[in-house]
Amino acid sequence: MSSTFSVMVFFVCAVFLFHPELRDRVAWQPALLVLGQAEAIMFVFCFLFVLYSVGSFLRSRKREFGVLLLHGMTVKQLRKMVFTENMLVGLGALGAGILGGLLTAKLFLMAGANLLGIEELSFHISPRSVLLTLAAFLLLFLSISSFTTMLLGSTRLIDLFQSGANREGQPRFSKGLSLLAATLLIASYTLAVTASASTVKLRVVPVTLMTMLGTYLFFSQAGLAVIHLLKRNLARYWHRTNLILISNLSYRLKENAWMFFLVAMISTITFCAVGVFASVNRLSAEFDRDHPAEIGYVAKPGSNVSAGHLRQIREELAARGLAFHEEETDLLLAEVASTTLAGAPDQLALLSFSDYTKLVAAAGMTTREEPPDADGALVLMSSQREKLLLQERKPASYTLGAGGIRLDEEGVTQHVPLSDYLTPELGDFRGGNFSGLVVSDATWEKLAPNFGRAVYTAFYTDAGLEATVDIAKNLTENGKMKYETGLDYAMAVSGTLFEVQRTTYGALLFFALLVGTVFFMSAGSFLYFRLYSDLDYDRRQYAALTKLGVTRREMERIVTAQLGLMFFLPVGVALVHSIFAFIALQSYLFIPIAWEACLILFSFCFVQGMYFYFIRARYLRNLQKGYL
Image 1 (cartoon, rainbow, N blue to C red):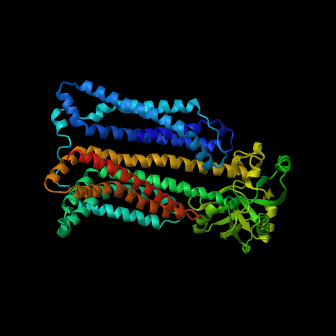
Image 2: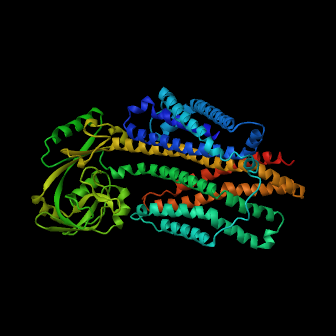
């Protein structure tokens, strides 16, 4: 069933990937890239998942294989039988997955179109989507079925018949490693909580590595230490069935430490991926603040194409029946002689304070900012997303031109007066990117004779963003022409940029939901496979306990507690990891993400609870067949 669901999701992604109606859309290339990456990630994960599941089933059947070999089956015949079985299961999952995809494709097309922010897509199944799914999963199942030679392990009869018959001795743990696990997790959580906008990117890799190592040591060492402390409380340890329950928990934890670690990491990735993309999708709501003009155009000094371009823009706006007004402003492009800014720029765009307030007012915004001092400047913010970084970084100083005029940063502008891409990009990922500086009118007039001027023309309309999609399409690439491209102009069309951003974020969320669902189901399946690997041993153990007087209700309570540990301990650890990850992310984003994070975590917990009760009922039914 898990393999069938994986095939179905892969097939649905392929249906989107080759849908003809998406190719003509503005943001097709970003969506194509996202869906292509989703396909690749799902294929790699499905390979590892199916490999693990095949290994689990083979381990649970070793006694059966011993009986077959005892009755004359050769090792070659055994491997051929297992290969054929795996291929039949794989082909069945492949056929059922494609059939399920065909039956639900229309539903996914509707949901995907909604997330992508486009009108409903027609029902269309490209033959290439079927062929891609068939080729990918035939290769997957064929490769894994060929690995059964290695997965079978020893074929000695004594090894096969004794498989799973006995457990190792008392589980042992290291106090030092247990303390290291607690130290690593506490340190990683502390670094996540104390992260700021400027440090969060630098801490991602070390915090992730510390969390992974700490999580593994928690399951393999610290968890056993906690159970050891429980055993020392004899009044509780010897109470009713706690002796059986706590003793079994130590074995369960020791034997399944690697599997618990794997499930916890997969669940953490799932929670964070879906939560992040659901939160980032809210950035579209802040788009107007980052792109105040519907169309922004900058003519570089000496440009001889600007007149024709501006005329084309006016004609296209008029042809669409859009009422608009223009604002024209000069930008100084000052040569930078020296600066304390990392990655010293060659040019710096300067905007006078009066022009800044004029552009802010033209966009319908108000400001109470004071003009900078004569030798001061305000950092010209390029996006609201950069505000936290720009406010945290150390103010820089600049020496401009041969005259050695010095400017010192005094703060950051409250608004974004002109869209990104229209001026030389300044800054870096640590301190934030910005578009230039706002200087006092007197300073601007003083500097004007010494540097070249670029002309910024802004077009404002009262229509929505959708009204300007694809305007001046021949002058831009996906709605923008960056200043750094080397042409005589730079340009940004907010409607097209918004369409690209909305579709890209929607595709990311769609991808995260699909892949996250596959990951989460697979994590549950890992637990399911592990349970059935121990089923024969558990049947013998519980049959013996029943003869000693343990009632059926007590037995169900013990099993429920043990299954609860297996299902909710790794997911609980993943929840804690995810909460601290969201706290670190919130320090980087300027929009609140608590609601999205809580909704995602609650949804996955609810699904895990439903899955637990389903597996519990099935496991108890199979377990009781052995001793009732």
